[in-house]
Length: 378
Image (cartoon, rainbow, N blue to C red; front, side):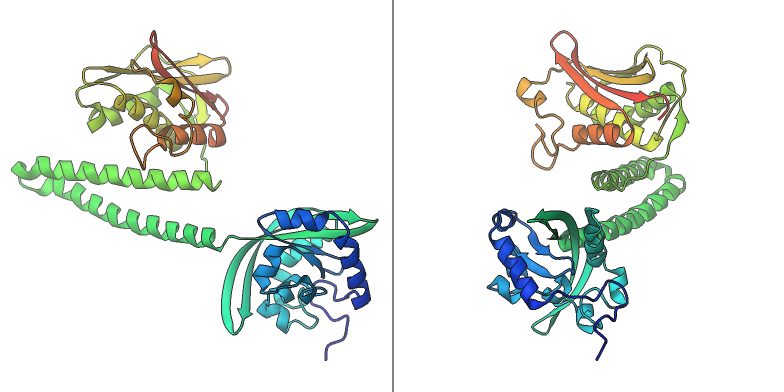
């Protein structure tokens, strides 16, 4: 039998049963229980020994209890049937595996007065059934009648984690497959009979466009989850516009329309991520082309703006007020279901990752102008 103070990580000391009951009685007459029952996450109150002295309804549902008294005095890992808590010398927090547990670390930081958020991978055994959960845990300190407690909350992020893993696998496999087909078509363009060359070229361009769309979706998902990497490079404004113009001149959106660079761009070098900036400018141009009737003109250009450079794209269409109010909302689109990421991604990539600003105007006199302002220093 292990010694009462034996531990590999967190202190093994526990409060006596009478102390637990007293703390529960104190909390029961406080406003905290009502507040915790009103929030939609698992939440419990722990004492200085990391023991449960109160839990909300979500907590009871999660551990399969009907009364909080069933969990009083237990530590979180014990209440949740963590497999490592059962094998630790003095329960939750005292075993070898507990050293790497995000929940224990979060609680110890909370007891030290440092509110925090961590992630925890929980393996538990409930009624003989093994289960693995990915959890986000957080602690916040509080004081009740001069006694210190911490509020420990848990959010199950297993679905989100698995979803992201599947996304990574999907994009990896798709890009490998499409990349191989694109490489094959690039070879065949030069090798096939001359009569078949236009068809081969068309298929190659379609594969290149599909590859670009897959990469775009991958970038957008990474941007939304704050995982997108930014690589700053010295750039010339005119070079960026020339690349974007050349990219869209031969696209379906530009057929029967005029796309042109207007005015002279400043020769000032600025720092930005060329891949993300091409994506932003490309979406601006694509939206303008889609809003332009055959025979219409889409103009793009840039100008100096104090210590920034401004890129702009203009077309003659006017956006209705009802659309203008929601134009940067995620998934809002006038083109039907499954659209609406273009303007949203312009704002997301520019403001969160490129350190710039986005705005637009839409009037009968000037048409619609989207503007992106970027700092010269990145």
